[in-house]
Image (cartoon, rainbow, N blue to C red; front, side, top):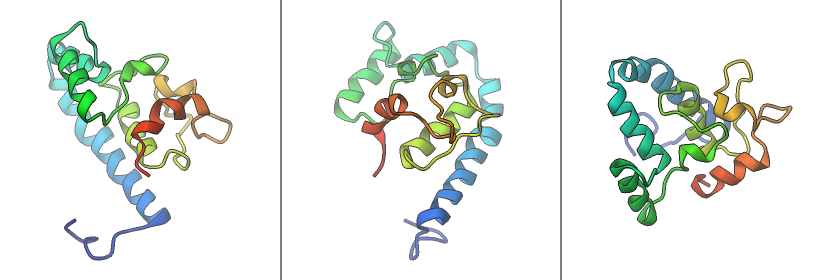
Amino acid sequence: MYGQYAKTPLKGDDAYNWDVIFVTHEQQIVAPPIYKKTSSSTIKKYQNMADKDLESRMGTGSKVISWFNDILPAFDSFVPPAKVNDDLFRTDLPLLMLYLDKHKINKNRCSPSLKNYLTSDSRVNQKCKEIIKDYAIN
C-alpha cells in the first residue's frame, strides 16, 4: 500500500465511505466520457469479455482466463444482463464485491441489471448474492 493511508488504512464505515466516493467518481465521472468516445465494435468486444461469451474470440479468452483467475461474475449472469457501458452497474458491482452485506443501492439511480434484486432496505437479495458471493472480498 502507498499514499495517505499506507500506515494507517481506513477501516469500517470510514473505509466503506471512501470506497463509495472513489468508485462513484471513477465510474460515473471519469469513465463515461471514455465510453462515449469508444467505438461500438470495441464496446461489443468489452461486452463479450464481460459476458465470457464463448462465441467470440475476446469472450473465449476471458472465459479461459477465468478458469485460472476468476475475479468477476459474467455480466450476463444478471437479469437483465448488465452492460459494460452502464455506469451505475459498474459502480455498484465492485462495491458489492467489497461490501456484499453492507452496500445499499440508490433505488432512484439503479442499474436495470440490479433493480430486480433490491430488497426493501436497498440491499441486494439472496439471488444476487449467489451471483456475486464467489467474487466477494471478505
